[in-house]
Amino acid sequence: MSITRSPGFGILMVDDEPPFLRSLSIALERRGGYNHLYRCEDSREAMGIIAREPIGLVLLDLTMPYLSGEVLLKQIVEEHPDVGVIIISGLNQLETAVSCIRLGAYDYFVKTTEEDRLVEGVRRAVRMQEMRLENQAMRRKFLTDTLERPDVFAQIITQDKGMRSLFQYLESVSASSQPVLITGESCVGKELIARSIHTLSGRPGPLVCVNVAGLDDNVFADTLFGHSRGAFTGADTARAGMVEQAAEGTLFLDEIGDLNPASQVKLLRLLQEGEYYPLGSDRPKRIRARVVVATHRDLERKQQVGEFRKDLYYRLRIHQVEIPPLRRRKHDIPLLLDHFLAEAADELGKTKPTIPKELPVLLANYNFPGNIRELRALAFDAMSQHRAKVLSMESFRRALDLAGLADQDTGPTRATVFDPDQPLPTLQEANEILVDEAMRRAQGNQSIASRLLGISQPALSKRLKKMQSEDTNGLAADRK
Image (cartoon, rainbow, N blue to C red; front, side, top):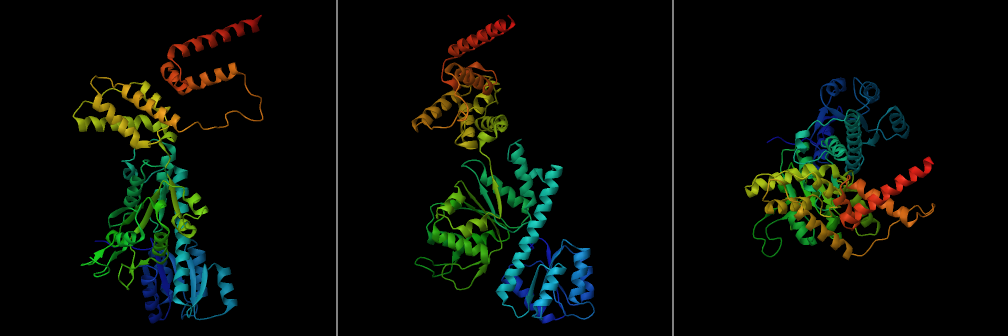
């Protein structure tokens, strides 16, 4: 099985002291989780390695034989400006550090610096490089309006431009090891997006999904981190948690907005330190999976009112995608309806019927609080009752009428319809505006427009004839 290399680009360590290179490699691998490492003991070979290998970050000593670190720094900045450089020197001199930063180094550390500070500095540089590469990829995709892996999104039925932009963004951040936050209302397809992220990443491990809603802290810790034998009563054998099971793959945590405060602390540590402790164990393990989380909650509001940790929120939203609800993707309704009817016909052993042209118009004027899952349920219900060649609209009308009554039961909502700085229209003018808008939304279909207005079709037809007559009389008067 292939091993995921982290980060996506290589980290080159250049130093003429082999023991220091070995200790630095161990520190980066154990404490940073980085295994995409290259060593160079001869400074004359460094530029050749950068040219041959996918190097994104160089950790460079200053005092070396042959080529000094300062000379190498200048060459790297001139010939490979996209490669970041961190100076790790035995010299603790402010003037030297300032000079290196001015020449283009990202940071400067002294070899006697605490290991944690050094590893954290490398983490910051890696994140900066990943963001730069992602921005380049996004710029390229949006300017050319291309998808490199359209097959990955084949299960997501859409022709919406916003969804296409979302796919392009996911392709751009696919190589990153940073978390992804997926937001959106219930039943919009967040798990499908998580699966697409996993496929795009090319990680060799599995996608492991965990719904964390309602888990208390002990169950959360046991589910994610596992336990050792004898950790608690009944723990007769050790059990690997979901983090370990995800291995080199993706760990998908759904309903993250419902996570309790104590568990939020544990998740934050997992993301910050990259390590965790199974219950009953005093030996830490490193996480090798990428973390993807999803929620239908408004995390920004929750962290503002103190219900969600601010530091965890900002750690999770390094990469964020919001899936639009179905009511903002109305052009997708005919596609989804056709797909679900075909799926239902196959499952029920029936022939897929012809869809009345009025049906997509009717559905486009419904808000779909249950989003895609609600549309699928409507299609399956209609298909189960289907008997003729043309699909009956009756089950859709009945379901939408019931949904409308339920909306009324929740009480009216007061909204600003008219511009407060403008005079109010007369009742007759308001009536005409309302009728015109209903006919526009119904695409000229009087039956659907009358339903939107809450009146009978003959009453609407009478109003339209009256409006047409008034317009005709008005034109005649103007000619006189």
